[in-house]
Image 1 (cartoon, protein in one colour):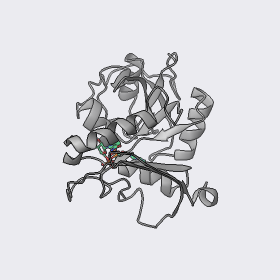
Image 2: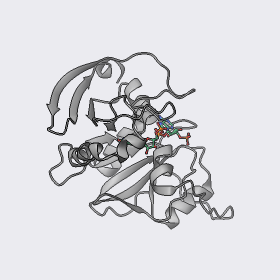
Image 3: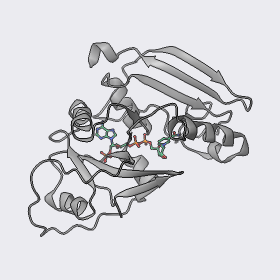
Image 4: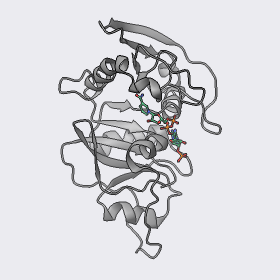
Length: 236
Ligand SMILES: NC(=O)c1ccc[n+]([C@@H]2O[C@H](COP(=O)([O-])OP(=O)(O)OC[C@H]3O[C@@H](n4cnc5c(N)ncnc54)[C@H](OP(=O)(O)O)[C@@H]3O)[C@@H](O)[C@H]2O)c1
């Protein structure tokens, strides 16, 4: 995650020239040609997807669509990374099955629960968008990780934000490492989401501690911090 000095993950701080270097450094660490993290996919919360890719467009659903086969749907793999989209109610209005982030092309992989309608699953199949069902009414994070491994051969996935998604996996003890690129900038917005955020009904403010693994400083005052997450052995 790229953050401001005050731990915010979006906002005007990103637009000033002094943040450019940290933005590029962040992209290279996570997605560049010689990326530090060689993940096969990155998880994103529904708000992050709507803010950046689907722009709150409603899916066009055919309520009369024939019943789709039960279970998960795995489209033919293309060798690209997966954009693993947490969308437990089936809200996202995807236009196609790939997206572009910088020079990274990714396959969309929707994460649903059993409460998602037949019409939404038919909509995804029609667009050849893979989906997995992980949980009855709410996300079963462990089952999701198991399915990513079993069905998509993923052994390293990145938590790509936002703060609500990040905290849900961390609080569940399912995150090994936190990696933060701090921009030498802030805008003090009181409404921007933070690196970690609670959400009622999903997470709470029970603290978690971290052990520093590495610090790297850059000439432009960017700082890259990596931490072990200390609750992972006890909860996972
Ligand atoms: N600086 C960076 O590196 C960076 C990286 C990524 C994102 N961002 C920014 O972060 C902002 C959004 O962050 P955010 O914290 O507000 O939202 P978020 O984490 O992107 O999305 C939250 C939503 O995702 C779903 N969700 C997440 N975890 C879930 C779980 N464990 N179980 C079930 N559903 C889950 C829920 O969707 P429903 O509401 O549908 O239930 C929840 O309301 C965006 O503006 C984005 O651009 C910044």
